[in-house]
Length: 266
Ligand SMILES: NC(=O)c1ccc[n+]([C@@H]2O[C@H](COP(=O)([O-])OP(=O)(O)OC[C@H]3O[C@@H](n4cnc5c(N)ncnc54)[C@H](O)[C@@H]3O)[C@@H](O)[C@H]2O)c1
Image (cartoon, rainbow, N blue to C red):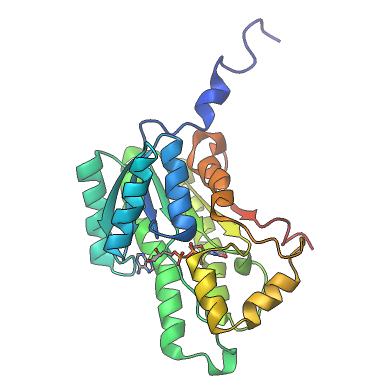
């Protein structure tokens, strides 16, 4: 072995830093998205909080700034290609660059499969799958032009296993897992990494809302939690997001990382 250091001195302290980087976070006004936005900001990134709810995006950006971070709210509907292309241009124009995209906009609808309303199936696929694809395309083009960047999609344990009354959601999240792999393969040689996170059931406004409509899905999931009644709290997804967004995961691409408290083990 040579007499030099095994790894460069100070290497680890730079691994997780996002200083000088710009991150766009869709669905950044609520739940997992706002937690990841706040976490990436604490790691040093400037954040574009992208959300269809303009007021909520503004409130999230203000909260990140109160915490000492830098964040700008931008209203966008991720299912609208023209709007997504425009907001990607706006991020670069106003923040000077883009290095990271986190796709957390998403929703759920509960219904027995045989009665699942077609318009709800279309809405879930449009938001969860196409609403991930379109930002990947629009921001991906900018990352490819720069020759580097990291995309973090939000899939779900439902991208791997099934639960009742969620056929559209399961289809969309299985799609996100495979979309992540497809994009990663196409872009690996051009410096752009594409990964995903597969959360277990987390306590967010979304799960509160759909849990109230019908508890069939959540009861099924909760009954199978490896630790009794242990839901994730939004801050517990932040570490995975920073890992996948940062140079700490430089050789990780096409991967969906479960943040599932062991749910997918058995
Ligand atoms: N909470 C969980 O238990 C859980 C588990 C696995 C996966 N997920 C996934 O995590 C992601 C975030 O979920 P959450 O629980 O934080 O939900 P949430 O409802 O709290 O947040 C979703 C955000 O997306 C925004 N949004 C909705 N439609 C949009 C659109 N067309 N354009 C832009 N923004 C839009 C909403 O305004 C909201 O701010 C979703 O993709 C969800 O499927 C959540």
